[in-house]
Image (cartoon, rainbow, N blue to C red; front, side):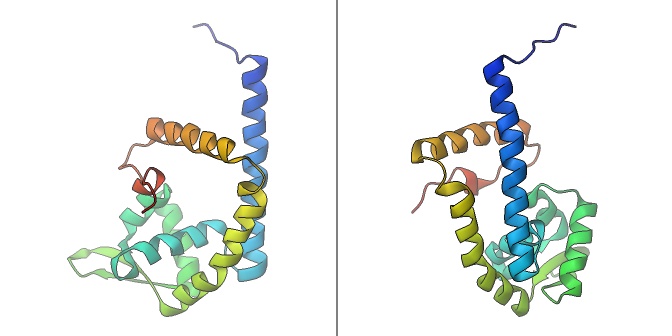
Amino acid sequence: MTTEWLTNNQQRAWRAYLLGSTLLIERLDRDLREKHGLSLPEYEILVRLSEAPDRSLRMAELADSVKNSRSRITHTVTRLERAGLVERRQCPSDGRGVCALMTDMGYDRLVTAAPEHVASVRTALIDVVSPADLEAIHRAFLAVANKLQTQARDRSLSEQPA
């Protein structure tokens, strides 16, 4: 098997992606932790629950939506449960299934955190790149997500604004 090595331009792009994405995720996570006591994965779970009917999702569906393993989701939801932000209940439609339900306290925390999180996203990414580069990022990572996803595609990635 022969390896098709990356060109210099490809290598620079790859390394810029690794560094930039690592620094971006670290900054967003740190901002949420310092200001709201939430990690970025916890915040994303709250967002997904807030968008779901009755602010509730089956644990398996929640894991699929945030692209995490079921065991990782279980640990993260346990932390959110201890903080009073999420509850686990038997799913009403299926007694065997377990649902994560966002509490009123969880919703209030999300509503409080969201404006500052969006401001952090703007400061660290949106306002740093041109609109054309932002569209290129969208196209590039939508293509990557479409190639690598094994579950249903996330409709929010390709929906056009209303």
